[in-house]
Length: 324
Image 1 (cartoon, rainbow, N blue to C red):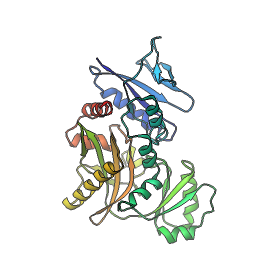
Image 2 (image 1 turned 135 degrees about the horizontal axis):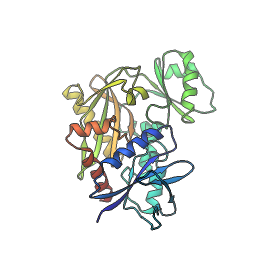
Image 3 (image 1 turned 135 degrees about the vertical axis):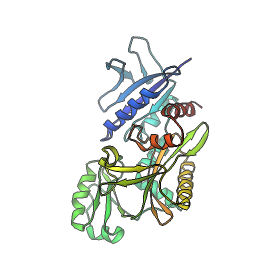
Image 4 (image 1 turned 45 degrees about the vertical axis):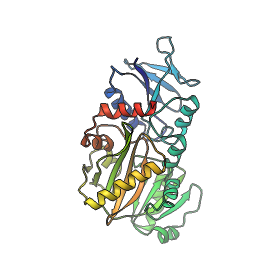
């Protein structure tokens, strides 16, 4: 019997349109002979089911069911394609855990931890994972540019602590630019992390559970045409993404080992994509994404393709693992 799959997409953050694209790709490539795939769009005002004609039907949040033709449909599994809140920060994961409904991403605690850059880096530093020097700032706190420069130097990156797709990130070269960069970050989140600039090769590493095994995908080298790997570079073609990366055997071994270590140590599951910058042969962690992009332009599908894993296989495997 075919499984009923809810593909959740949308969300509450600036990543909404990217999530819609990811969800549509999943819907397109899930095998209709094996799955009844249903698109569920989650917005602040309402949760709706999109039928094949584009009509919107309400979702019953009491049991996460739909009834587009009057007869209730319950789901066997949720495919999480929401980037940002509430799909990447643990909120939806906790909801589905309470309902006892399998879903493709990591658990609620792990999602909340990885989505919070400050907490993630603090935890992993204790395990010896190299990271950039950082300075923390919350909305309403006084800004002391001299203290920031003393801690992280110049240039530096000002980032929204809980945001993705490079929203709320600025590269700052002068102390006088800090206030404007902080205002940009505060539009995305009321917590900020300011990090030292790491001058080296940037790479992205996908780690997934595929056919019951933890698999490190081929490493992607990031060469941005802009000043850093920002939104334009990620989604509007302003970058080169080379898979497999043009790095040494030692660098590849080190970053693959570290990416696997982070995945297993944190107890992650499903898809993840971690970003690193090399200083010499030593990879420094920038962040971990637990619901990475799944559009045709996204890195994880590119890496899977190089590994010989089609989109159909990639998406079906995530559902099988969740059901397992």
